[in-house]
Length: 120
Image (cartoon, rainbow, N blue to C red; front, side, top):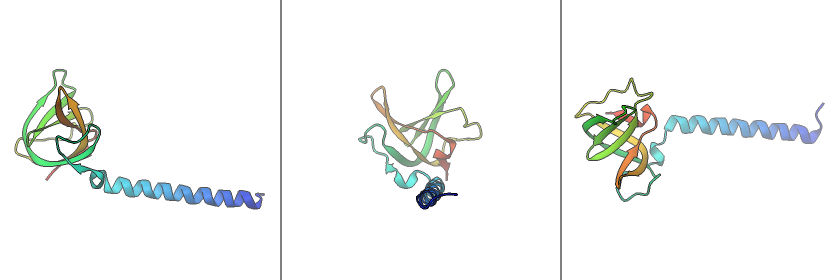
């Protein structure tokens, strides 16, 4: 049998677990977009950003492991792994969520998952 303090600790642990699971479900449902800033080339690397624009060009890196997508003049760096069902075409209007990175003195947006690019 549990003593009084143990019962209180168990109840508090259950409450904390429910709150954490609930917060995780809510945050997964709303996604990262509400926490992202609108893209600007002046933002620091690592900043979570969103960009709305038109796909102008799509190419692959030499090893084929990543795609480089030009969205309204901004390079989107996207891994091809896990993106096989994601089909983008020139002229698509998209919303991109990712993190700012600098590669060879040029700003780009790194995309981590297929859900980070939405065709509108």
